[in-house]
Amino acid sequence: MTARQLMVVAAAREIRDGEVVFVGMRLPLLGFALAKATHAPNAIGLFENGVIRDRPPDGFIYTMGDPPNIVNAVACLGLLDVMSLLQQGRVDAGFIGGAEIDPRGDLNTTRTSASGKLVRLPGSGGAADIAVLAGRTILIMEHEPRRFRPTLDYVTSPGHFAGRRRGGPATLITTLGVFDVTPDGLRVRTRHPGISVDAIRAATGFPIAVPTNVSETVPPTEAELGHIRRADPNGFWTGEN
Image 1 (cartoon, rainbow, N blue to C red):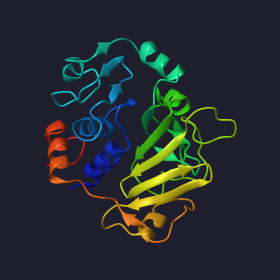
Image 2 (tube, rainbow, N blue to C red; image 1 turned 45 degrees about the vertical axis):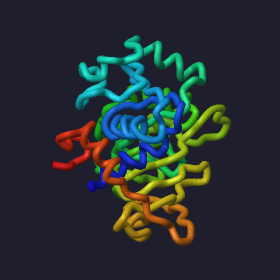
Image 3 (tube, rainbow, N blue to C red; image 1 turned 90 degrees about the horizontal axis):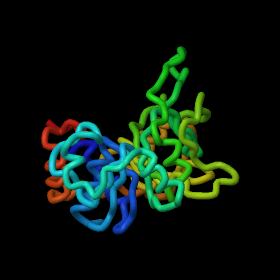
């Protein structure tokens, strides 16, 4: 089991049966496929390029426009069509990745000076829209001190803020654990197997809440690993060779 496979399982567990989910790419795509195959067979997946799916792709996907993501789709529309579902409040959950995060769950994917010089990042795509308009957001990213910053240079995808009318970040999944994202800051929900609370604190650039007796993240079963390997047979996204 790799850390990324554990993140995929944690992502799948955040998807509830019957939900409309803005899936995105990489690990959340595998999480959507796993959820569909197990506890959430009625979930619907949306992609920024306009694809809507009610079943996982039958082959490996590198980009959301790859043929396996088009074949057997419910619909292949346009960006404005799926984004309008966000605006209408019809999207229950959305996955967002980030280069940096602050205690409120704000994400930065635009520019950073954390290394001492200005670095341009890929930008928002649809992440800002998902962050503001989805019923809730699930954040997923690597866990390193340089990524967890008390203050961001740029807020690409807003987290919790005064006057928010819909949704907000609910869960953060990292390479070290799973966290609740609250208006008061991050709180450890589970730590991944072999990861200590001290290691989590050391890798986080600001204080986080730690309940007493934090449990371990439940690892994937052999059946769950089988589903992940079928969706990512060469371990391109999960790091398993």
